Length: 596
Image 1 (spheres, one colour):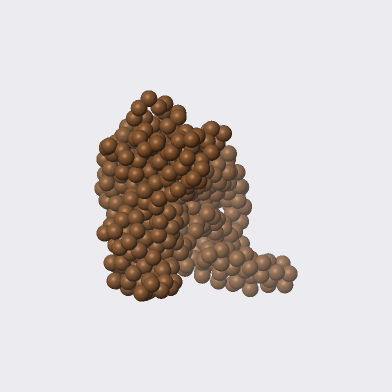
Image 2 (image 1 turned 60 degrees about the horizontal axis):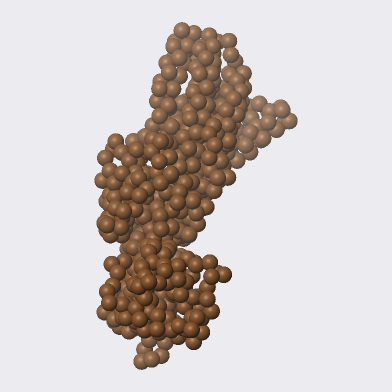
């Protein structure tokens, strides 16, 4: 906002100066007005420049300040006003690019579980989650988010911990099992005893990790700043030599006016805004131009597994009949029995069978925590846990078991399905220059290795909690950076905040992930990550070309101005031509060179 205020201040003073000089014929007052605003803006830019230098960077402000001061000192205040308009306009444009799609990270806190149901001698009342004390008894209703960490004392239910641990399979939990805040209860109400206050619970620990990661961003030198040092040195050399040979300080101002680094100040942000606009049309919200800069030169890309490389939902993997029954018939019977159930595995079963193939089920009886029994086609069919269906053995993975007329008939297993576009996405990213693709998952090593090998991941890290994911990214050597992190869950939020570029899968992802990321992919399509890299690389290539064109023209003008043939006000006008050329060229990033 401050850069917008500076721009409006310069515009207002410019209007006043025009009225004073050409309306009231008071050139002296016009000069004083422009000189005053020039001095204030130059001082503010000097303060900003000192802060930039202290942070270890070198910006383009030094040359800009010198140009403003030089024009004011020799009385060329209209030329100075034009330079001020370009400088403040460029800064305001850069602010616009940076904040175009940014959302406030504080919305992460809004996702914190806020309500708990406290049970006191059988009387249940709603309280704020922060009011739950250690030792309190809480009721977690079906489908609710667990408000605080605790231990189950009554009830058995499937609990979805994918947003915290990355484990794709809901875990069955009963009395004595631990519950983490931020996880989601299944279809059965649970009674729990509070073991940690809300402020000390798992979800708040992740919030703190996000805030800590955001507070220590990786050092990165912007494109405009990289060109600033040599351009400034060349400008000062030409201006100094021109003043020394001519003995006229006006010659210094004439050179510095055409040397004003507007191509650096304008071309880069215009290119970035154009690239961000292109990304937005492709369904990718990029929150800052710096994100595009880093993404264009990224060396490593890291993925979460559940919901990112995989679809994040359990689907039928294998149908294992125990006798002569066909796999199709066993699946049909199981899905028909489960079609009225709201259980997560019931939904997966019914999705695996066409609606027209589902058989009518009568006398349906759901046994909480065990399974469903029904009459289908004159047969008594049970679907559920191993002991409910009389299974002689249990499968090593998530499964339901089926019996027909009290005879064990087989089992159906489930697995998290890999996204169909995942392998092609990894291949494209490798071709685009990101040669180190890793997967950081909270799942088991066996499952993670299997998924990683299937899609072409170079290295797999398994059993990784949110803090561990940060350590993996933080431990990458310099030659493998910048590093990109792609994820979708609450457990990915700290890593997304710490990574050089964090990309959140926003279609079904947690708000925490979207808020802490630098870019959000709105369509549920992993290949958009490769599209984002293509857009970033195209944008940076066009922006660099625009900058080089501007630098080339400015250098030519400086050499001409050194000969004293370009008056200061004319030089300022020439600078507008340079600005127009570089802006028009940078706008080409809106469409890019490669299709996505």
